Image (cartoon, helix red, strand yellow):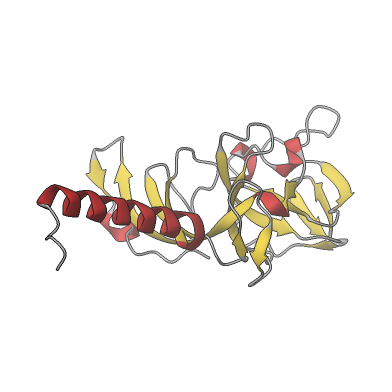
Length: 203
């Protein structure tokens, strides 16, 4: 008959098991993120805390980012979290505008998708000034064709978002997941909870 486990050993095993489960969930199932900037306003506000599905686009091996089990493909309009191409230590969140094969153009703030005006129900503009393409690509950009294995993303706050218009495409391998729901929201300016935002499903 084996000797009963010591209390210390039981605690250590329970802690290790919890760590393994938490790592598995965070890596393959769901992860929490906090919104630090206003580039996705009004859809996402500074201080919103969201849950992101890590398996919506397939189960990926950590670190090497290759897809182990394909599940779905990113769709136009999805809110996606990805590794920021210019600083891979950071994660960004933007809305998916163009998928592989799409031609994207911005003309005087209006988005053209494959030569046709995009029904841009999520985009907002905070600045009436239209900047020419010779100065910067915010309001006039392209046309460019999205290559295979890449995505074109933009923030909903079109005039205050640093996105694919400036730094190019997102590799499909760098997509971390799809934003699902706001589970907590804190207004740091008023030091209060935004109760009306909790539980908001993201579209």
